[in-house]
Amino acid sequence: MSQPTPVRARRPEAKEARRRALLAAARALCERAPPESLRMADLAARAGLAKGTPFLYFATKEALLLALLREELSTWFDGTRRALAALAARPRTGPRARPRAVARLLARSLADRPLLRRLLALLHGTLEENLALGEVVAFKRFLREGVLAVGAALEAALPGLGRSQGAAAVLRLHALTIGLQAMTAPSPVVRQALAEPDLALFDLEFEPLLEAALADILAGALPRGSAR
Image 1 (cartoon, rainbow, N blue to C red):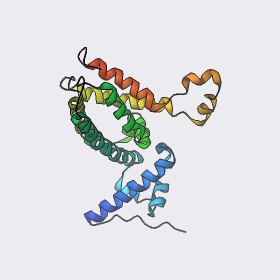
Image 2 (image 1 turned 135 degrees about the horizontal axis):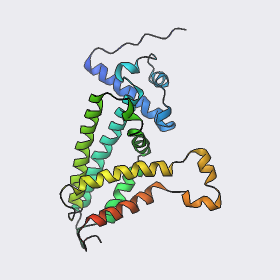
Image 3 (image 1 turned 60 degrees about the vertical axis):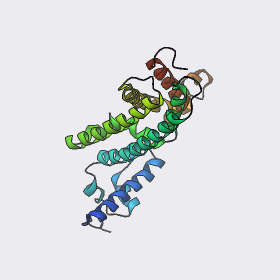
């Protein structure tokens, strides 16, 4: 049986609705299997579209996953900025700097978003390898805006941080997330190996490791005596 011919929606609102439908289908598939295993044909089938239709909206699988990552990051940026603002507004009975509380908030925000972590782990080595220059520049500018916004909220929550130290801390968080995601999400065969008693050292959990590392980073960035 022949496949239906891909048809691009003509009206702007129809095009955006179809694009959103493709992203929703991609999200559903990537929540069940590793994002790198996604096939555009499976995506089209999930969305009820012709096999070639996704390529009318996303030139490559990498462009699609980058758009999904952008959605995930946008939600994370907004939620984290609000959570840090709420933390900054709480009455303080001791020193204004609270690196452990901030580290706990940030670690929990990422532990709760496994798809975001998996996509971030693919960003530099996979997704950015097959993108056009314009796509990379647009994404990096979006990323810069989000990092600066969360960085400013971080500086408000930890007033001892100097100007631009918040953004620097967010970039370190980005790097830690990528590294710890790889270390704490082993393949099935590695997970089986880690069941050996003498290999328990390598059976790591994402959230506590990230919280401890962030607390140390934030405490080290604050003036002496304020990080309590």
